[in-house]
Length: 462
Image 1 (cartoon, one colour):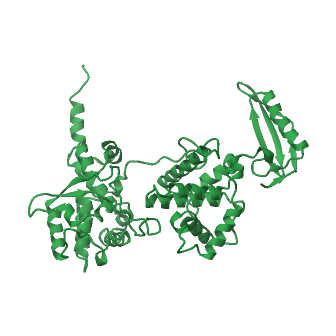
Image 2 (cartoon, rainbow, N blue to C red):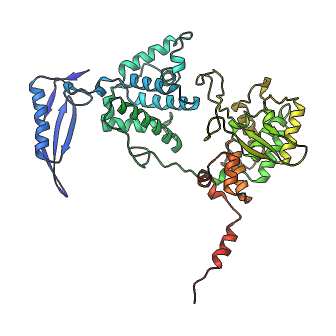
């Protein structure tokens, strides 16, 4: 561990406080000052004496901790980069593909913030790619058949040599630097509150791992609520933005426009209609098979939803496929849920099954060549539909239907506004009632007049 003999220890400083005095030990290692405050002079004298004894013995002091190297803890001996890779490897097998990707992103930001010097000899994008796609991807890093490219290896070797030890987490200034990095986008702007919260959660798990293995004594990350800079993670709004919901006229116009597209328009129309009228998540809809739907010639049908296929990227899944097969969100493995299908949607689904000659085991919404419908494809179709249908510039630029997921939000809000009990909506949607209320309560309309009448029935005696 690097150290210096250039150490100067100052006299104890007495500070007056409202409830008495505190005593501050101050010393300088090379050009950096360090300090520690104690409630009594005896404790401060003891600490100062320890430091003086180390200087007289000719011990080098650490540039990082400011303490004699003989005080080195396991944190001082553990390289952050090595620790981060170990933590990623330990959690890889029990993590979903999307979680693996999010962990890699958080670890990349933290690692760059914990470098001794900026890697100016490498392009910033290549450094981030090397960390995110190779260092913190257990599958690719350990693939013997496809070894890490030499240019990536050079970058990672440099990072390993120039990363600070875990003892850097004991410095408040360095922790603040990492926290700021976790809340900042590549262009320097602030990240979304949900992203900051997710990154903080990931880093907290890493800190807990370090504590369990005796590397750190306490979690150095800020606790509680804050603004996302030096304090706790910023507050994330649970309730959806009402402006993201589409009205019935907009939904109809969007679906009609999509249905008129050449070649596969009707199939895309049926896919989006399933989100708007059955409230499925996109990753659930793409996983539906023809046999999962009961489609009578008239009346309501039903879906038996039993799996989701979120899109994560082939480098993050165990199978090498773009999508990862998962159980339903928030449910036990193998659990299912039944969702009603509106008669109009039943007719639309029967039409695409007949047109594309789909069999019971086929995907209900197949992509090109019968493969799973890619997110990049249906997002592109949706983007074109919004641009064509939401013609007033203010509508197109508004949050209305900006994300494909807003189709599900529009559906669930409609069910609640139609007076369907929250418990029933939660069952169809695959949510809990508390989550449903927290997310959609502000969007329930049409019941205010009834509530006011009830309030009006009660009055003060005169």
